[in-house]
Each structure stands twice: as C-alpha cells, then as structure tokens.
Image 1 (cartoon, rainbow over the protein chains, first blue to last red):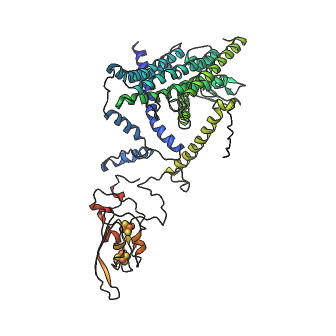
Image 2: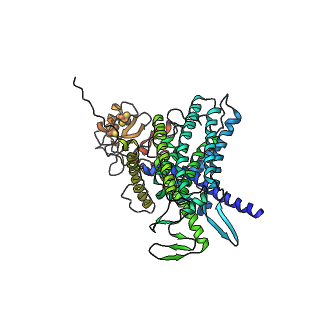
Image 3: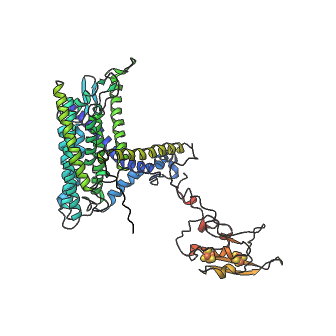
Length: 375
Length: 186
Ligand code: SF4
Ligand code: SF4
C-alpha cells in the first residue's frame, strides 16, 4: 500500500516537475523563438553575476546569462513582488479562486497522460502514468472543460465590462471548439477501440507495409489537423486569443495583477504543454520509438540491436519528451506567425468548417471500422 | 473623373480553409528561424561571423556603423605637437545659434600664430548639433566626427565639455567609456 503510494508520488513529482519546468521554460522559448524568427536576438540582459571570489561559478552561469535564461526567473520575481490588486466591487472569493481553478484543472489533466511504457522493477510493474484510468480520454476532456470555469469566473467576478466580455468570448469560443475536439478524437478512439491513453499509445506500435509506424497521424490525418486547430483554440493563444484580445479588451484577466495574473499566464503555457502531450499521445505514438520493440531495435531491413529493458523504457520517455518539445516548437511557430481571427471568422471556422469535417471524419471512421469488423 | 474598378479576387474553397496561406506563413517564419538559429549558434562558437544572424546591434557593447558624415560629438583637432589648431578667432562662438561655445583667448608664444584659446568650453546641453561651428572654422580646428552619440549625463554640469575633453574625447572622468562600468566582460 505504502509502496504504491510512494511510487505514485514519485511519478507525479517527476512528471509535474517536468511539466511545470517546461511551462516556465516556454516563457523563455517564446521570447527567443519569436526573436530569432523575426531576425532579432531576443531578451538576454537578465544576468546573474556573482562577486569576484565566486568566479568559477560565474563561469558556469555565463552561458545561461548569454542565453537569457534568467528572464524567466526575473519574471517570476516580478510576479511575486507586484501588488495584488483587487478592484472595488469584485467578488473577493471568486476573484481569488478563478486563477486557481484555471491552473489546477489544466494540471490535473496531465494525470492521465502516459509518458512511458510499463517499467519492470524487480517483480513490480510500474505504469509510467500518474493515474492509470481506463477512460483517460473522458477524464482529460472533463478537466479541459472545467478549466473554462476559471476563465468565466475571472471575467464574471472582476466587476469590469471588458473582463466580462472576455469571459463571454472565452466561454463561447471554448465550447465551440471543444465539440470539434471531442469529435476529432472520437475518430482515434474508434480506430483503436479504447479510451485508455496507455492502450491507445500501445496500439500505435505496429507498422504499415512493414516500415511506416502506425501512428495516429497516418490512421487519422484529418483528425490530426482538426484536433490541432481545436486544441490550439483551447489554449487561448494568438490565432485564437479572442478571450484575451490584447489590443481591444485585454480580456478576462484585465483586473488581475501579480501572481494571480501569473497563474493565468502559466495556465496558457501549461495548456500548450498539455495539448502537445495530447497530440503526441494520440497522433505521434506517445512514447513509441520507431522500430523499437520490448527487447531492442528491429529495423525493417532486417538488422536488429538488442537493448536492456531499462534502456528501452528510457528511450521511450525521451522519445515522448522530444515529440512534446517538437510540438511546442510548432505551436510557438504558429503563435508567432498567424494573425488573430476576427470573431465571426472564428465562429465560421469552428461551426462551418471544423465541426462538419469532424462529424464526417467520425462517420467515415465508424463505417470503415464496422466494415472491417472492428475490434 | 474616370474610376478604376479593382477586381477583387474571390477566395476559392481552398483559400477559405486558410490552409495554403497558413503553410506559406509558417514556411517563411520557419525558414528565418532555422537560418538565424544556425547562424547565431555558430556565432557562439566564433564561426561565420561575417554573416549576420539578426538585425540587432547589442548597443552598449556593439555600436551601429554610422555614416562618416553624421554630425556627432565635437572634438578639437590638434597640431603636430599636440596643441589645439584653434586660433581663437571666435567665429564659431559668434555663429553658434545656441550660444553654447565659450572661448577665452590668449596670446600664442609663436609669433606666426596670433592667438590660441586659453579655455574652450562647449555646453552639449545647449548644442543643437547644427554643425555651423564646423563649417565656419577657418582652421579646420573643430570637427564633429567622433562618432560618439551617448551624450547622457546625470546633471547639466556633466554635459559641459572643456578643452581637455574636446582635444581627447572620452578622456576625463565624466566621459569615461561605459565598459568600465560594466559588471563583467562579455
Ligand atoms: S553644432 Fe551648432 S549649436 Fe552646436 S556648438 Fe556648433 S554651432 Fe553651436
Ligand atoms: S572657428 Fe575654429 S579657429 Fe575659430 S575659435 Fe572656433 S574652433 Fe577656433
């Protein structure tokens, strides 16, 4: 009993530690990537320089200084030191609760994401997943939907018309896109016949024609694009940042400052990581490494490299992290490339293009699954 | 008046999905990203320095190349023996629209040269950088070609340049180079 508890605690600690660090790092990635993309250098002036007698440490710090990594730290310090302002007439309890709701539900969704295969330690089997839910997909969608509450409550409790408007926009946008998201993922669920994310990942271990990995992106290419679009809309970042609308209404967090604002900010980044994890799990085979089986590599041209169990698992986790990082890069690229939608365009895209397309995808997948006998 | 009717190209079905433009845009930004990323990484190791990875000039450490003709901070030119070329003719003091030059003349030991400045004060706080002083000088004794742009100071007093500073720009303690104030070298 105690043992299970400790194992779960370690798993949760490791995974959430990774996620939160990645989210923090994304602030840096965002600055640097946008800068490099726009032919700039990017923020690099937050330096930590220790006094002379600690010179060797300075040598270690220097690369980090030059890369501007301490800007994330400076950000955090700023957020904590800023005045926490509460507008007059605001609902004190809800105003405080809203950012917490936002960030907690975004983080909870990570529980169901498998970041590695089952690890054998002695005679113990450890599933590298914080909570091994057999309806993981449903759990994640439930958490994502609950996350909307944070945003709506923020807009509602701030006693500010602009915040209210932002909250309303967020509500309508997220409800519209969640439908597409759910339906797009239905195609994947139908194809693999399970709601458990670990099982979905495992089912992607096969190969087409003996050499193309049977990842979700090849099984459900349309669902990939639909899910990505809808999921990006869920993160409320730029092509879909109408709830925020920096240039006109500032959005649902207009009355937030200090760390409460920081939590909303973090939520966006955590959700970006979450969406990257989901995309990886559903469409890029999660922790699967191409041609890596339980006992080592088996290449389609016949060669094989045997590997110990520990290495296979490690490679799996590394593969998962790499894929997540690549998706994060892609999302940042999208965020810094595309202009914002107009509100009618957003609704047009959501209801007239994505929604019918996801319906059609689900219907066709169902037909194919039934015709082929399904699982 | 004749009107020209611009033909608007209607979006076709494909354009309406936003996909073609989306991929073009991503292609352009990613191309910039990977090119600049590679160049900037190489720069960290001191390679390929002749190709710029960004348009940024890291200002205090790296100054933007300026045109030779740009009017920057003044300096007084020197004779071969290091004394000022200025003959204290007061032309610049007279023409200066901001009245920021103040010269006190004295006799020059060499009888061939009539006068020389005992003190030459120039108040940068008043100067409008018109360059009249340079144009009017008969001796080519004052020039505005030091390429120094950072004339920032904590007080008006510090904006006043005396003859030493004008003869040897950035020599007196008020106008020491920024590098000495920097916490660590880059
Ligand atoms: S540049 Fe113009 S304002 Fe400045 S010292 Fe020369 S004449 Fe005077
Ligand atoms: S015009 Fe030239 S020579 Fe005459 S006082 Fe000015 S700097 Fe000296």
